[in-house]
Image (cartoon, rainbow, N blue to C red; front, side, top):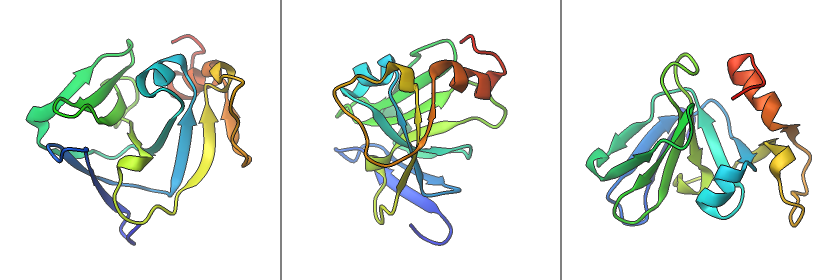
Length: 147
């Protein structure tokens, strides 16, 4: 990753590209049931509270997957582009972008797992990470354990 932490990526077909400024090299794994259905397993993401700049926005589909968040994908090739909190949930916004979407240096560090209480038993990551249950995640973002 460059010294400015400005990262770029694009979908499989190239119809959508994005850039985002990151504050760290950290990767989070989400094990919630929605992420498992969305991608067939855990969602490995880099997270940012910065605005994500998207080119080819006319090719972006957005699905409101819950009352608090929505998921973006390329309408042409189906590539997952982002998970983001809806406006008003967290001041400044929050994006989770698939780590594999980002081009270039991938000196990422898996440092956190969320919705660990929904993780299936058939896999486990080898490295030690911070782990949060779903209730702990909601508490961190909203101050309440209820979604």
